[in-house]
Length: 450
Ligand code: MEV
Image 1: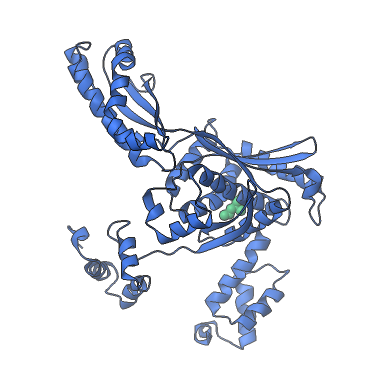
Image 2: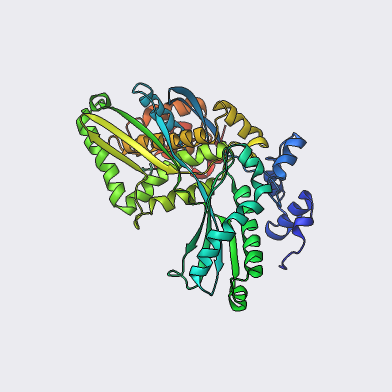
């Protein structure tokens, strides 16, 4: 097969034809699969097609609701877009649990984002620093005025500019580090536009300055200008707390539960193997809410994991304290989110999510997102340290097998009761299903779908 040039120029139908012809033996079913996800509303379909490039279909994610989240005294229903079973159920369960115990509380611990002009300079670094302080810094502010004007009107803008000497890490490597407040926008475009202007201004100012030798001027090389997705100063804390007695479980006393729970958190603080799974569970809630609100979950993931590894060892993002009869459990999360710009005003479901959340500003959304992560982690640790995780998962596993077999509602009810206290295995379910439907040969299973 030859590589194709000009794939992007083909229309949607031509792209599908080319693909199925070259990779899928012109399979009609493959084309049908792609088309069955197209939206009947041509306008809506065009909108989705234009979010990305070379689009040939839509990829659905289930969109679920976890109600009863009491956050800073406000009762919210959280929208969660996620394909993994049990996540929405776990979030709902944790919400209900904390509803009776004061709910969740959030606090913004910082709202600074950063970005860098990464550059090389072979010359006198004291001279460079002095030039930055006395000339360049003001020029950088001046020449980004057109970009920052609107952001300043909204109360944001450039917070600080600093020259960073990185020559110990890489010889001749420096940065201009900018810190920004981007208010309710995620801010990537704003920050990157400022940084690119900083680079242009610096190149021109240094080339025109009498301070630097010809060699020094020629040695200046801008490598790249880009925001950092690591935002440790753009931080939110979500927290729950209650008296220890309030945590009593049916078959376990409160102190026993708290001690085991705290130990589970401690293990994730010291053991990277556990911390990875522990944090994955936190991200189940966070990503689902980030996707439902049209934010960039890759940026959120990258930031959370860098923060988790900030001490040179990958650690838990949540922490727990048991002191003076009080149980406290919290999540510190650096996260950059937007409630304006990007998909927020374009994607109808994103708009719906933000309306549902009472149109939060970016800081409120940071809090709600952190709560989704904390709730998820609480639910996971509560299961893990009591009944184990499989009990909840087994029902879903059973339903997945029954769906594959084409079981009807009567059969689903029968199997739910039958497997209430048994381990669900594919083999055991199929065997009972065949007995029930009087099927002797497993190959006949598909023909028996109702
Ligand atoms: C599964 O998606 C997430 C958990 O493994 C998280 C955890 O172990 O804490 C249940």
